[in-house]
Length: 93
Image (cartoon, rainbow, N blue to C red; front, top):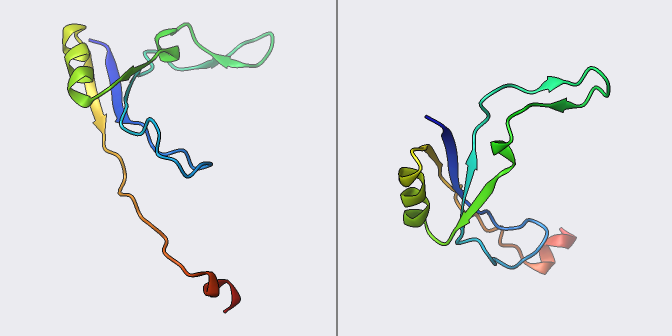
């Protein structure tokens, strides 16, 4: 039975907006380990499912897809959102 990882898209660290943070992503887990190519030395494997990332509008839709396709899903919770509140005057202390 193939395994997959389901998580909510985190906020982009380079921008202040929270666009697309409500989406859920489903990624397949690796079935075989990566190995070095003897000619180039690059790491790779024959597992092409790891290149797939599916987007869903909510968690229930993602779980329904996983159940319909016989996937074992590991749900990764999103970390807590912490705000660093500081005043402009704190830069001069």
